[in-house]
Amino acid sequence: MSATTGTPERRAKFGLYEANFASGELRKNGAKLKLQEQPFQVLALLLDRAGQVVTREEIQQKLWPADTFVDFDHSLNTAINKLRDVLGDTASNPRFIETLPRRGYRFIAPVEWNEPSVIPSGAAPSATESKDPSRQTEPSIATIAEPELPQADHRITRLLFGGLQLMYLIFYACGLWRLDEIGDIAEDHFHVAGGKIEALVLVTAVIGIALRLYTLSATGFNYRLLGAKFRKLIPLVYVLDLIWAFSPFLLQPRIGLGLAFAACAALLYSPFAQRILAMITWPAK
Image (cartoon, rainbow, N blue to C red):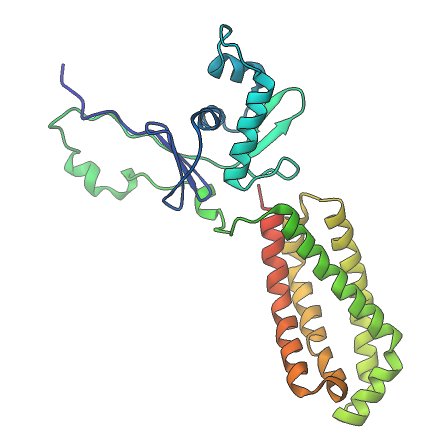
């Protein structure tokens, strides 16, 4: 029998993370994360059964045998909480570990496995295997499509996204309230037909109010599909926000030209910020 070239390292990649089963290490973008042995063992068990429900009883049998005297519920809850802290995950809006009340847990993110084969010592891959690109291991489509988004607290990103929706609702309400004044400013200072500007404000504000009421209510109820829905709505958001980004110039006689330009630049960036916040808060499964 031929000897093998060491113990193969079994690794699982998900998002920006990689778990090395041989060394018991978890890394993010190559940087090692601090994670104790028990939480890593729970993670390994969930990864092995990715997409399937792993019951609390199964975890207990694997990690805490019957002759182990330990508060199992407390130990498992502690391990899961440490895992979520390291992964930037939350129980209310999970991206990796989903809780099934009174049943167990399920790993819900796409997982790419690196399962190196055991090669006899002295043996080398054939020339055909090394040259044929179709035989090379490629990352899965799910992994390629995984957006490299920054990790952030779900509550903060949700609050920021909801705050931006509320800000635009206030803009629209103020615009409709001062509709006649907006027309006068457009004629007096910019020599633009006041009636056209008033019509533009009226139409875009009515559409915008309906849009922002939807996004704000969905944010309040933490609607998990809002990220996907908002990506479909983003062309409309771009158009509305582009038009309203020039609204600070209507206040230019009062706030000055420099401040009007600064406010306009911030509003032009707003739709991009909303899109990123929506993707972070409600990522695609």
